[in-house]
Structure formats: C-alpha cells, structure tokens
Image (spheres, rainbow, N blue to C red):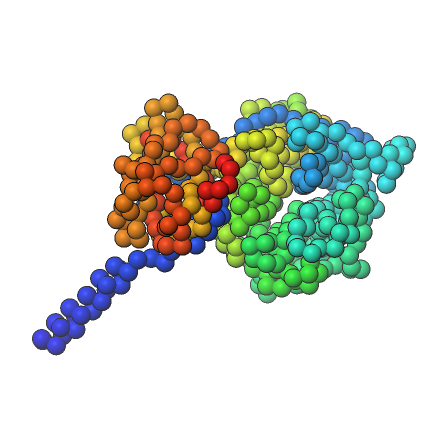
Length: 499
C-alpha cells in the first residue's frame, strides 16, 4: 500500500511540475500580428475577439461593355507601382455561359487610386466592331472562364514572368500563363500543369474540380508557390491546396480543414476562397471566401422578374466569410458570421452574388479596400468597393466596463511596441510587460505605462522604464487592460525608426 501511495504522490508531483513549466514562447520578431485568431492570446477576461464588417462605398465598375455582361465575375485586384488593375471574366453580354464557352474573355480595368476605375484601350483583341477593347485574353476556353492572375514577388523571378496566372476546369485541368506587364499573356507549358487526377485528395473523388476561381501566389512565409483550388468532397464545395517550387510541378494535395478555437468548425459550402497573403503581414493569409447557400431562396418569382435576373439565378443566396491561415492545411474560422452580408434590396439576394474579388489592397493612408461582385446574373451587374481601416478585419474589443487580455509568452526584436488601436473619449488602453510567469517587469508594469487614448493606425507605447530593447529576445508576456476600445494589431520595431 505504501509503495502504491508513494508512486501516486510522485506521479501527481510530476504532473504538477509539467503544468508549471512555462509554455513555449511564440517568436514574433518584428512581424505585425493581427487579432484574427487566438495565436497570441492566452487569456481574455471580459473582452472578446470581434469581427468588423467592411463599409459599403458603392459601385466602381459596371460590367456593361458588349463583351462583358451580367455573368462577368471571378475578379482579381492587383496593386503594383502605383497602379491598380482589376481582371475579370467577360461572357459576351448574353445569358448564363458554360465553363468552356469559347466566347468568354478576360477583361481588365485600371485605377490610380483604387476608387475611380476606367478601361484601358488595347489593340490586343478586337470585339463588337471595335479595334480597341479592354480584353487581355481571348480564344482560350476554358482558361478564360476563371483566369486568376497574380504578381509574382519571388526573389529573382524572370521579368518576363513577373505576372503569372492559372485557369481551366474539370477534364481540361489548370493551365499556367505568364506576362511581363499583366496585359500580354503566354502559356508557360503546352497542356495543363494540374489535372483532377493530380490533385484529388481521395480515391474516387467527385468529378467537379477547378470549376470556380483557383488562386496561386508565391508564399515568402513558406518559401514555395501555393495554389488553392476548388474541389467537391462529400457532395460539398471545399477548398484544397498544392505546393510547388517552380510553378509548373506541383505536389502534396491537401484538403483544407476548418478550425474554430480548439475544435473543428462547421463545413460550409465555400465557392471561392480568394486566399492571399495580407500585404501588411504576409505570414498571414487572408481568405474572403464566398459562402454558397444552395437552395436557400429569398426571392419570389415576381421579385426576380422585377429586377431582371436570369431565371436560373435566384434560387440560392450567397455572402462572404472571413478566414485566415498561418500555413499548412488549416483555415482559422474564428468568426462564422458573414464578413460581407447581402444589402437591402432584392438585387442583393440572387444566386452567386456578393462574391469577393481576390486581394485586399491599400487605398489610403489608413484605409484598405475589398471589391465585391454584385447583382450577378442581372443587367445591373457590377464591381463594388468596400473599405476597412488598415489591419481592421478584427480586434480585441472592450466594452465600457473594460477587461483584460494576456498574451502567451513571446519573443520580439526591437525596442518599442507599436499598436493599431481605437478608443472612445472615455476609453483607453494600457499595457504591462511581464515575465513568462506573469510577474510584472519593473519599469514596465501597468502603473508605468502611459494610457493610450485616441484612434491611430500606429502609436508607440510609452513606459516609465524607457524602451524595450533590454527585453528583446527574452520571453515576455503582454497584459492589456482596456476600456471601450479596440486593439487591431501590434508589432515591435527599432526605436530609431519613425512612426
């Protein structure tokens, strides 16, 4: 009996010791970290992670050229060198088109500020008796159905292939294209770079693969090209990904999982993923996915007739959801609610409307923009702009009564802590720097912090103990005490840099 008791006591002591060991520190370095998930969060007391919906800024581009029409869509936004460019499918102005319809084309529009958009006049592909159009690719079905370009920022990329794209569906597979200027495109290889047999994630998978917008990019965080494609799994539209070193040979097809907190998130039908690295924190990929509610009908036949929607396109509804990924085969779905919800009016409640364009881009000193395909299948089909504050997808939110958040242990580089935050006139944010065990570090305790009041994209936290350079590289925790405030992002930087 004594031996059994001694063994039990030793096991209990070992268990306590194991629990007492501090958790492994998160290496933050000087990266910007957003509160899209609980990656940095250890505990929240009377605070919550809150999603922020973009603000509707109105239409920016009507799909009203003869070669565009009500079924224009699958848009991509590219921002480079002071120019914004939108790529999207044109369908010849008629009714619903098949994926491999030979009349489909790839169009583009341009902007100097992301707000006012015009069509370039190009002599590449004449249409409708006009020698100059805004068409950049034609006579390439079914590549033109879902052509998705991106700016390749891989170090050492060939200037002739600075822009790359993929397109194609089903049996045809995905083809790769490249361009030096984003206007004149050439196929990189005869035949597809991926077929459905290459990428199905299980034996006997469903036959519909690639049949919406498939998106690729160079991931600096993972050191490889990534391609996110549409697949059916168990009768539902799902997202999978593959990897490549050279954009031509692909490996490791992986069906993406959805996580929410410590568990799995519900599997919903996601039509497009629009996954892309966030331009201010490229180690985090943002997915503004189109959520498709098949058979969930909001309109009567009379309402559908009144707005002129194609008769086959008012039997479902759609919106957009926000997901994020820090690499690998997992999307975080902290927020199950809509990111872009349908607006007021019957025109917003038709099938396959509210599909976001790929990429969120900066359109002002404190603003970024998301573009959304709306009024799909209607004569009024257009691209619409929505805006958010920089880093403003989500926040740690405090109400008037206030609360606290403590981070996991982390290590950083730099000498000062920069916050993207907002408060009310009555609200505020204070920060305490602690050791891994939660003990305040002298000079950086809560009482040593100057309260932050205001609304700024980036402000340094001031402590009585001076700068944080002496703590760089050491595991620390951050304790935030907040009232009527939102904390959107944080990062550490060298104090010699300007705000």
